[in-house]
Figure (cartoon, rainbow, N blue to C red):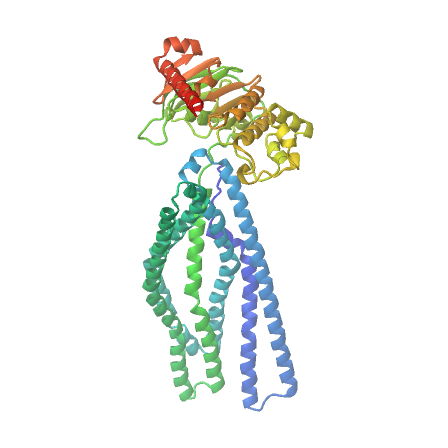
Length: 580
């Protein structure tokens, strides 16, 4: 079955029907007291009403007012209940859908953009469904009920009142075409300003570290000034057309007053009928004139749905069924090619095999394609050509869940959630016992540090693990991977940014993590991979050599050059320490 995660205007309008029916009843009941009052005035003027009739009619008016309020209250309750359900539903569905999307999607879309959609645009749907749609129903229903009532009371007065309605809809249709582009531009400008603001707040530490406050702040403020200037121009450009639209909407009341006055002069209607018609006509025009405002809300709602669908309409990258029988084995690349776009290939005709339970390393200059190979194994991207197999099975046929079970990655930047150390470790294995957690922490060389903290494993680590050092976060990440116990471990520059004291502990932790596992290390520090069973040397997206450390020293000029350059860097670093 084809999965369709997109949302539409009609599906929400259908689901809001109970609320709109209740509000229709409320509006209809609300017209009755006006008609009764005018009837009472007519009877009083002709001295045809008794005290008993006044009490009865007054009671009916009171009942109508109470019923009107009750039905209106029920309508608002249903509208808000429905709107908040939709808000929660969309956010939950979006989060679930985002989890299914490929890594490439998140590289193409800005975090600020996605945050703005999940927060602002989803809020706009709630605002429209809870407030806009009920008010639109009122703004359309009251004029309809009044027009029908006047047509029944006196066809001439009814036709006079609605005489300008066709002109209003014709003009509104033309106006919508003229301002649609402006509202689209307004939505995009609002979105961009929100994205820039989120990006600015997120990068304040970097801005301060590099003394770029004034430049970045000026750029943000300039963008906001441009936005405000454009909004002012747009407001001016649509104000006069909107004013003329309002005049047309109120024109029916003017026509009604003229026609009614003529009929009253010729004694074709009585004063009471004329006064009632003017009162109803005033309500008609006043309510009808609100439609452009609610139409504006409708445009914003549709723009919000379009932004939501720009995420929900993206097809999931991997929809394969979970298969717990899939096991780890050799990882084989067959003629694999990859490019982020058609202009430049990142990987070119890659053929390699990572044997089960072997220790492998990929080395090469920055940009040679090392990390891209890791991303392909993790399923973050799909190869542009060729095939990648795990234990003989094409990974494009393996579900994301199974691939995540088989392969884990330890990256240079370890990410921790703002919760306790124990909760962060349980991400590796939800059902882990406390004993298993402690054992994993010991293997990761982090248990003693945890126990030195006042709250031990219950210590909250802060946002992104802010309360811990880089080495401590890295070892917690390794403990998490030990609990997860994936058969394939990718080490992506895992020790490149760690001090020597932490590096020693992390190496011991990695040794414990890698027992009876297939290890794939991506490294710049070549001294960390010389004991690997197999080393792949990459240059410009190609594998230009592979073998053990000793074999490559004999057969690969590039590898030998890299080793010599590494030795020079290490010697220089030692001299710097001695001289200091």
